[in-house]
Length: 129
Image 1 (cartoon, rainbow, N blue to C red):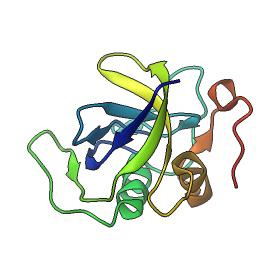
Image 2: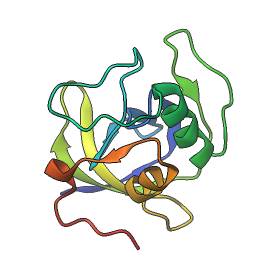
Image 3: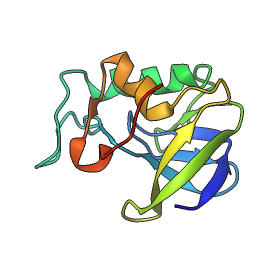
Image 4: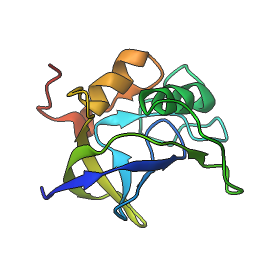
């Protein structure tokens, strides 16, 4: 996949999209979170945590909330991440594996929060450090 930089500016839910200052909207690869209406999509893992719990843990990884915008997206201000695209995730989103500025793998960090589940169909051979 193509490598790119993403400086996170907004978060919708626990698996994205994450809006990047550079333009892309990222769907975090390899994980599944509940939808904001509390449901889980058919044929995807359904974590016990609420969508708000997952979103708030993702926001915390980006340094905490800086406010919201009328669409409901949470504003964040975080250092740039290095990402590798896995291709389209529907709409204007790209599925991507990202590494936080700290060196932590974003997908692995979210699984460790217990608010999202690993989605084996997309996780493939990804390894957490």
